[in-house]
Amino acid sequence: MRRTIFLLGIALSVMLFPSCDEETPSPVFSENLLTGTWKPVSGTDCTSETPYDFDDCTQQTRYTFTADGKATLIDWYTDGETCVSNTGTGSWTLEGDVFTVINTTDNETYVHTVLKLNNDTLWLGYINGDPDDACYQQQQSTYFLKVE
Image (cartoon, rainbow, N blue to C red; front, side, top):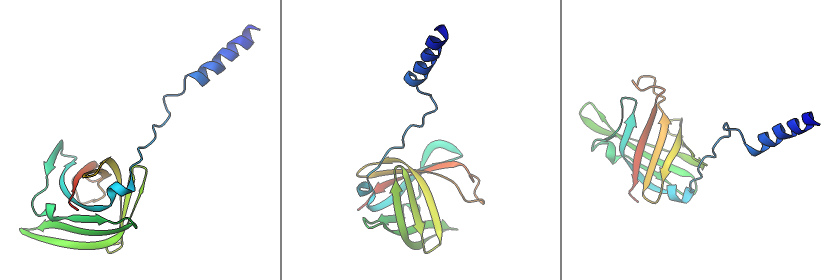
């Protein structure tokens, strides 16, 4: 009888006190909030946890995401002392907090974690995949403002 009560006690303990290893569900963000045109304003990288502002050239970048899943990507960057652009098109999906952009022009896929999303703010986290970058395979983030 004692053994039965002991085993019943263990079984109840397991059911009443769930494991700490349970995963916290990922937040769900609305695709409607993501549609529009965004510009990057600041970011973080492996050199500092303090956000830094992007330069005027980079802040000309515009990413437009439409309700039908299409993306237009206009990247501005400094090449030497010249501000140049690169334009691409593609598609996007948002599943939970995983935001994927496929640039069909450059045949690149970018997977981000949505850290924050509201009517005018988008904050994306990602792992740097550029092997030529000092922050290769490090967590980075970019903060965007909606412009349209």
